[in-house]
Image (tube, rainbow, N blue to C red; front, side, top):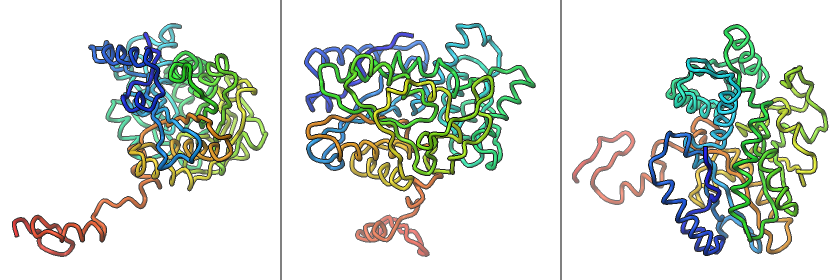
Length: 390
């Protein structure tokens, strides 16, 4: 699959001065190419845009940008992972027509794997622990996958064990997203170079990301550091589940999968981040990649996701809010003139049944009812007959 190297193409970014004239010409060429018919939906994976955060949210004296991974076809960064793993398995002869693909996931990977399986013609079975949002299950089933829900008490390792059992019994293919090298290598080949192209000839001081499998951090981090060793990489993890912060390693089976739950793990609201073990893909990343490890309070991640929606018009999930909170905290300590790039892993629509939307009402609130009553026609008021024409 060919990837176009420039991910910035909006006129808004061009106007902000981030793009040079030559890059703008390239962006125009990219736009024309992307408007041509594509072989299949997986050809739209990658080349996601970078968007400037306005001074409504960004502290004075610095610039913050966001790489919006919800522009992938199934609205998350995990589309890259799914394509990488399945393409790699096909290349190595581990997948053939009619096979069944299995993965354990909090949701975004499962949705992405279900999408690629649907396009490729594979059967798909996803194992997902009970606490994760129900809309994710429905999306996977919409894409033709079978979803096996595992008990809450088993945590992330429980859904991994279930996926392993199913593969052992039925001879199915297990993605092994947390251990598979194809995961981080795809980010090294795509996500990292996209960031480098976006900021070619421009200042970039910090790159901020969280981790689910660690693939984005490991792969994109390697690519960025190889070309821009001056860029400082800030890695974020939930304050309630400080696995890396604990300094305690994850005990592993021979295949690299976790033996059990990490002793520092506690439940946290940042879905998609930090399972109850340290992923091998993350552990295998060079230690020199990370400049700082930043703990993210769950409530701050939720509040920042709301601020991104209400002040920037950017609809991202709790993990995106957590990453942006880390970028904002980094901005407070950074020297004047610093430029910071944060990853936004997915869309807020994945979180309708989570705490992110807990105080977002479906019915009209008092202020909305007052607006409705301010003109006489077409009123739908509580405990009253609907009014059409006054």
